[in-house]
Image 1 (cartoon, rainbow, N blue to C red):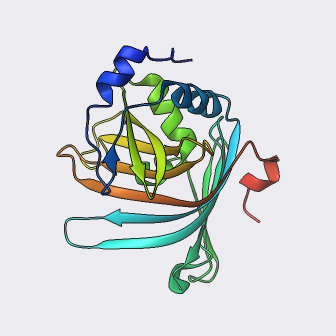
Image 2 (tube, rainbow, N blue to C red):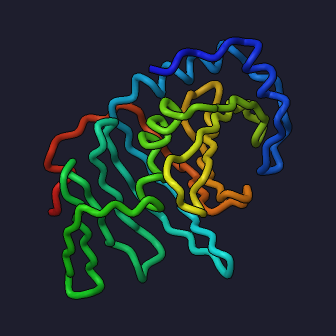
Length: 210
């Protein structure tokens, strides 16, 4: 488990300005400790989120519901827009299975992970944060709520997936926003959490095709 950063390091990191029209704040060490504890004790989560993928030419936003375990299993279902609703991807720990109802219920199975998919999971962010050689802790006021912002490095050499930041509400301890940046610091994936719940009950049947 990653050791808690010292207050001096936290305060230094707080000098970094963040985007999203947020107001920079001094990091609340107590809030960071509570957020750190919540994330490190997370065994699973369930969320509803809007996920926006940004390319050089356009962007696409999808409404999703997702559930994942810290051990790696996950289920992501696209619920909007209508033309792609019902697409489901599950990972049972060994195989990734995708179901597409718009192509005669086509099911495909593979062991090859798509990084642009798995990196939208908060459980994945926590893994990256723990394993990063360098992390940053920032703070900002977003929509009148104080947030702590954690930054981590994404492993690998994907040109569009280099670093990521997770915004967590200081009061609720719930993630509200996850942004993934490319090597040049451009936003490539934006995940806005509409609802989020820690440590939901899960069983293996959630991570196999239905």
